[in-house]
Image 1: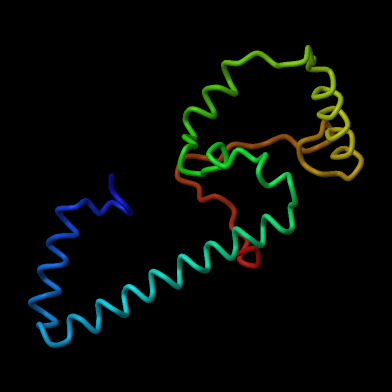
Image 2: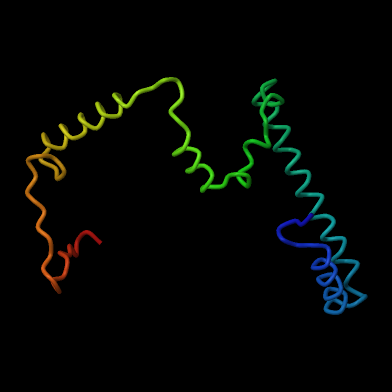
Length: 137
């Protein structure tokens, strides 16, 4: 098991380097400072956990924390599942179509591009630079 990509071998090399760089005189002091830092961080994490338990009440124990771990999410899997799974609950595409129609109608009413009343898009000639708005950037 590795913590932050640090395996036992890497930690051993870091420890040997620390012995040589710090020397036997200063090493015990730095080791105690490291132990104190680890204790402080552990106490802070436990305090945050206790505070969450106090604020959430009995629902805190019902939460499945492993499912909320961001390291388990693979964006490729999420997209693949979203594209391959059929819509659940028997929903149809009518609400989406209605929403798209209402947004298109709003665009036409506001005179925004994308509506039927917008001017035709003219492709650029070969070698012609795209229009640039210096105030927009």
